[in-house]
Length: 204
Image 1 (cartoon, helix red, strand yellow):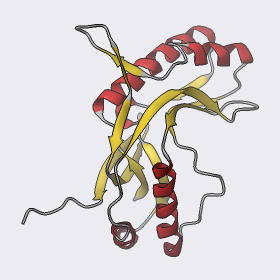
Image 2 (cartoon, one colour; image 1 turned 30 degrees about the vertical axis):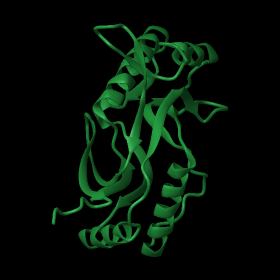
Image 3 (tube, one colour; image 1 turned 90 degrees about the vertical axis):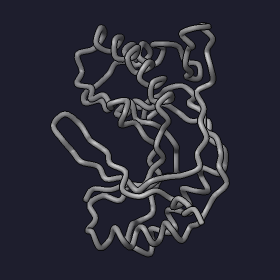
Image 4 (cartoon, one colour; image 1 turned 180 degrees about the vertical axis):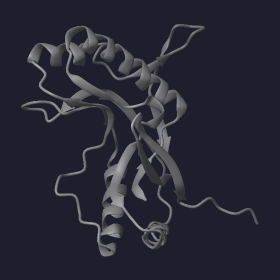
C-alpha cells in the first residue's frame, strides 16, 4: 500500500483551512487560468514521513518500529499564515504554515531514525512542517502570487463564532500520530488511518 506517517487535524482546524482555501481559490480563479489542484479540506494533514509503496510485511515492521518510540509529551500547534514552495522561482505548492514547538521536530527526527533501519532513506531537506492546500501546474506571475497570498488576510488562521463574531486562535494539541494509507483516485487522494501511535492504553 502507499503509506505515510502523519498527524491528523481536528475538524475545526480543517474548517478554518477550508475557509482560507476558498478565499484563495476565488481570487485564483478570477486572476489565473493555471491548472491548480486543490487539496480536499478533510484530507489535509501534517506529514511526518512519506514511506511510499510498502508491502503488508513491511507494514508490520513499520508498526513495530513506531511502537518502540513509546509515549511523547503532548504539544500544541497553531496555523500561521500561508505561503508557497519554493519561495523563489516558480511556486509549485501552496501551503499553510505552522507555529510549532521543538517537540514537533524532535518527534519527526525520532521517526526518521526509526524508519532508516527498515530501508527508508532520510530526507535530504530539513523538516519544514506545513499543510498542503494546493499544487500548481504551470507558471504564476508575481501579481497572481501576491493576490493569492493576500486573499483572506495574512494573519494566523482562526475560526469565527457564529453567535459572538469573535475570532479564536486556530491551534490544537497533538498527542498522537498515525500510519496512513493513501489511495489515489482521479478525483484526488483518499486517506485511511491504519494504526495509531502511541497505541491506546487498554483498561485494566
